[in-house]
Image (cartoon, rainbow, N blue to C red; front, top):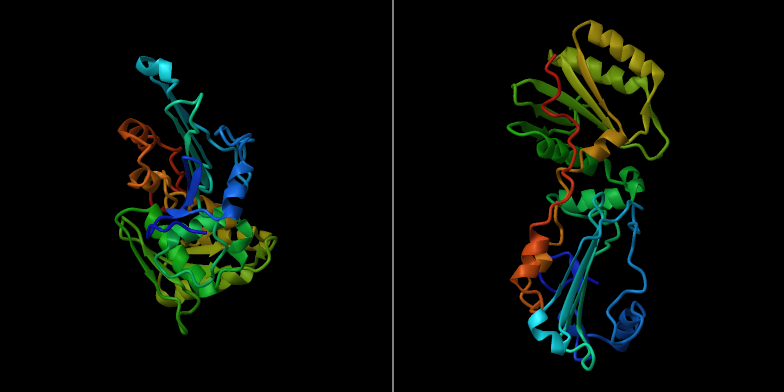
Length: 312
């Protein structure tokens, strides 16, 4: 399911006065039963198991919490507990909140929200680079099933996200001599990029790819080229001939699937739960709670290069 609020990629579940709502609508019996199985009892908010690792990429989840009791209302046993489990690698997250005004007599108000786990959609429109990056982090096999032309555009998006003050042009058309993207770095140096989407996760990029790139560089009178591939590695012959080409003045950068994966970080949302904190129907979350989670930061994404690729 998906959230009813436009452009918000999370599902929300709220229990108040023993009534569950899902994305703002009254829950069905099946939905209610599903949510109740996550807790020890109807009057207890504590989950049966707090996830320690992401269910998608198996990265260890970060689980900050925020607990508060009101000493002035101790006779009413007022307490509030909030927890957030989020994956710093693929951005999957889940949020729990429990608001109790009299935990001895009244059922607490429980709020659960979690990011939507989408299946890969080959028709995902251009401009959804962040959504595609999340899916690639959650399932690395998708690198090998993306439409090749879509892969070219996505590589262009990666270069735009990783470097400032640059120009990136997708040119992959018939007659392009194998060049899919033109990258002009901050120093006004022009790089010709050849993009290869390989179907096998264990594939090796061979010398023929470099050979074609070098031929195009010669014909176009350029010296700088990049091979971006979903292959796992580059062949020994390719690496050997790359060194020969560089000894003759060419500058060649090689990006395999691992390096492309690291280039996803600047595209990924740093705090994907921010939209949750802005929603009006979360009346139980006051400004102090919202500020606590809004001000949280994740580990900054690591870019492939500190600056533009070397100018040679």
